Length: 83
Image (cartoon, rainbow, N blue to C red; front, side):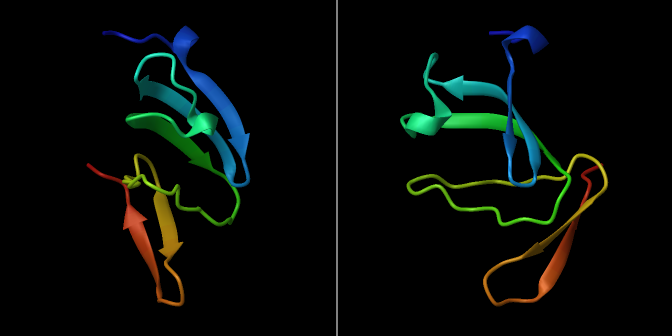
């Protein structure tokens, strides 16, 4: 199925905005936490915490620029954009 920009849902979060590109099953709502998977693209504009979502694994890939991460009490590390 091909999705268009008109179908995307953009919402604010503590670090910027996130745009939901797709979610399954169709009609699932992210806030309800009753989905199989979700694909989104976030604009990270502020330093913030990225919380886990119980029962889901989160995969992060940088599309543009660099993202600095720190997990728990560990060292800070940078993720660079995929090329």
